[in-house]
Length: 437
Image (cartoon, rainbow, N blue to C red; front, side, top):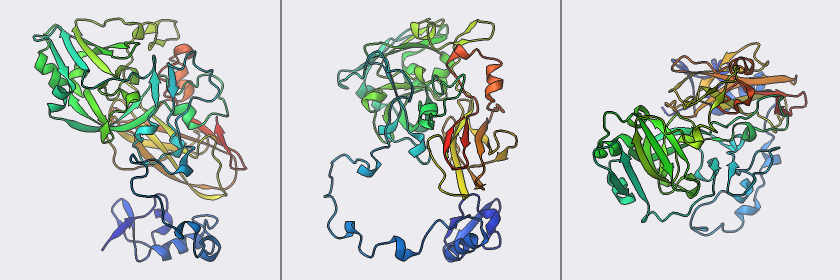
């Protein structure tokens, strides 16, 4: 018999209505209507969310009275015009960048579902604008401590056997919320330098094997093809582990702002190391100490020393709904939903608190749960109308637990700016409005 999964959080109130499989509540189509009616009558959903059909559904809606848009209009699909507010934007309250060629744009997590970020909403970070590169003229040079220095065209690279993997990408400057919280921030402001895509390309190990890395080669320098020529040093172990040379994202060629025609992808590492518009890989014996890893992308410790090469993005999570700038529409049942991720592997647990961390409860992890990928979590919540403080904390496969803000600040100087993975809290007022706390 065909079955549907019961919405997370309702299974406890519906056990007398449905057939349970081990660890999962299911609901057949046959008893869907009667179960929903019984749940509403029992108060499990709070106030009934719907009205009588005659009050809400016109007998002949206006949009049914004429033909719709023509086929392939436009030729490249676009969202509904009624979703025009779902866009990337700069961070609220931040000063404008000194030039329009350098800056950021943020992913609107409050408006998204699942774990994959649409290509047009993936966050951006540029240092010298987006170059217009002809893929037929683009070249990748592999040199340094190799047996055979090589130059690859894009045709050369796409002839290698390809792989496709889902991975998150997070800027290490994501969540720059040290100090006093700003109530007006949304999750787009606090966590918008995070996105997740299906990436397609060739394993970097395959290309390095063609060149033949010498035994003394311990570090790799990756250089971008934009005017900034951004360069970062990468441990050779990462290059031979899960690094990819990607040329496609979410089923289509990379977009220019994401590195078209070629970028390096280092799953789980800070986003700055996944060099866009990749043009050069040089093998050396030690870190190359570029500007991007000396004056930037390093951490200040409490004793005023500077720590370099904090590559891995530690376990982190955030509630995306309800979140800052949103408002609860009445008391009763609400689903708390959010995202969790870790650069060390899979997320194994997410806990949710509705009282600011006094008590914690396990949330459900929505499949798929993949390594170094966003994981969607869900938690059922019955809001009675009192003020609340919503928070989440994640645990990854290594056993690392997302820290509180106080715990992180005890080991890190606030001037670090980078790698802030502290627990995020949203305050819900009695009127249902939600603000950053």
